[in-house]
Image (cartoon, rainbow, N blue to C red; front, side, top):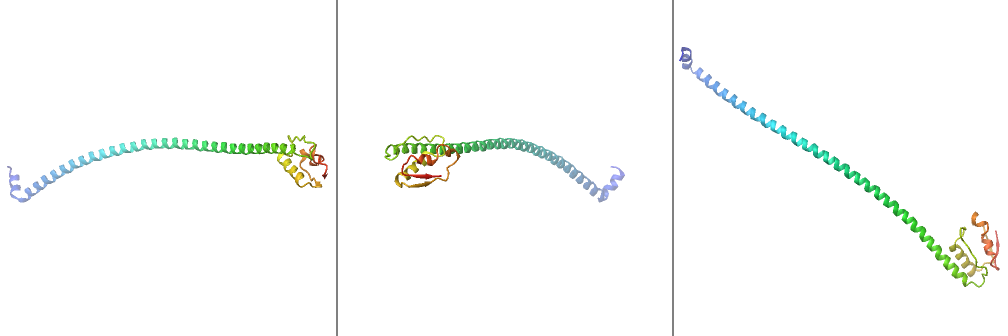
Length: 182
């Protein structure tokens, strides 16, 4: 040992500082190892987070595609529902029109059957095609004339189509007991 070392060894300060230096060096090495380990863990966490982020982005894109598909299908269904509603409304309208035609045919048959039994109506050749009156009106008129037998009737107009050759007064002239004026 050198003189310097032996003098330093004799004083406790050298041993203390050497010991402290060794301890701090070891602690520094431990911190360096720990820092290296933590940096590795941090890097692994960053990689894992990046992986999760990418998975979430991919899932998000998948969900967006699914949402767009479902919205498209939903809109298609709404269009189909509207189309079905229009078809139902059209069918209802056609059904109502058909019911009116059937009722009119029924009145025509009732009117013709009623005229067959009529004693006082001699001219029974009614044709109501494309006129302003229909069989339900004529049946009602006939029933009034047959049951009430009015003496006077005032016609105040039934429309331009009917006024030409088929006015009520012209039809009522067939009945001998009625005085009809326009």
